[in-house]
Image (cartoon, rainbow, N blue to C red; front, side):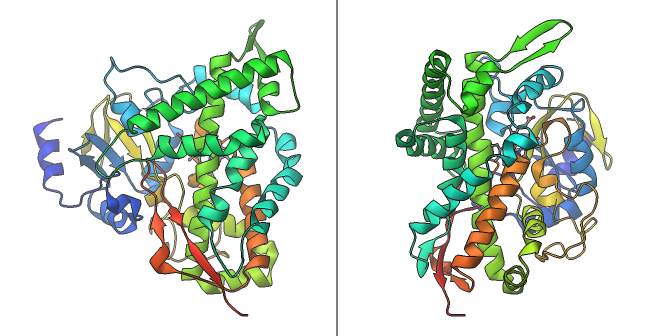
Length: 411
Ligand code: HEM
């Protein structure tokens, strides 16, 4: 970093630490200050840069040539020493052309038709989870939204029922971050290895005896490029299956938990949905804007790039902070207000990413969230959150609750 750049950034008082309680609590005040006072921000403790304005985050997320994913999608992997044990390569940490090949292969099992065909299964899982709760008093996350997305994904993949909870516990261990610690814990690392080995073994079973599940379909998938037939290896499939737990289960868990706290803060919006269920899809989009479960995407700058007179040097870790961009008052009117009738603008949903890595499971996530909200509107048409019982998760990249106790209120 040049002397001028260093001086500029150290004079800046605002601090953003994605491994602090401030981040885990929802760092929206910090984000506002960053957008106003330090739209290009440098954190010396963890040695990363952050962009927080919509006008920078959106094009930055799209520009995979400037901002590479190849060193990883979390700060600890990006910052890992070059001699660290390399994590298996997964789609989210690939750049084109490698990414293009992988995306083409896995997209074959994520076609709109394939996702639409899952609706009955998704509905059944959601209602099954809700039937087990006492609507007078239960925990939206612990008793519901932490359970069904994992059920959905593991069922899609073909994990037998008795193993699905184990997969979820391993995932929780992998994502857990202790405040002030950048990397997954030793237990988390072991849990991710166990998940990978579990899927590897399942793949061997499906190779011997294919079933009607995603792992069997991924085994069969192939694409042809320049006359060469390409297919997924067992390591590719097990890495992809492991990644889906984090990418597809935790995010939906957080969205539904965040939703019910947000609706308690904006009860008129819940009432609007109750009166007109056709607003549910728009409400899902607004909830994603209001509190994106994935708060930032990590990239590595491939060359020097200058924002507002400050240069981010080539090779730097850069956080593209979606959680801030979707609250940017330069883009959204009254951004801190949840408004299910909000006018939707182009590129509105940065919460699913943008560009080559945009969320592969967006259609599934939207479907799950829509069905879950509809079911909750029936179950707890009037509710209150027991705020003393609210607990936040401490995780990398994602923000949300581990506990959201609610009570049914008489209508
Ligand atoms: C509310 C729920 C969800 C949110 C907020 C979300 C968000 C995101 C974001 C922001 C990205 C881009 C990451 C980047 O640019 O580095 C992404 C990628 C991805 N998501 Fe999701 N996601 C959700 C649900 C799901 C589900 C249900 C699945 C699958 C079952 C899924 C699978 C994926 C995959 C495979 C990628 C990587 C795509 C690629 O690298 O080409 N996601 N997601």
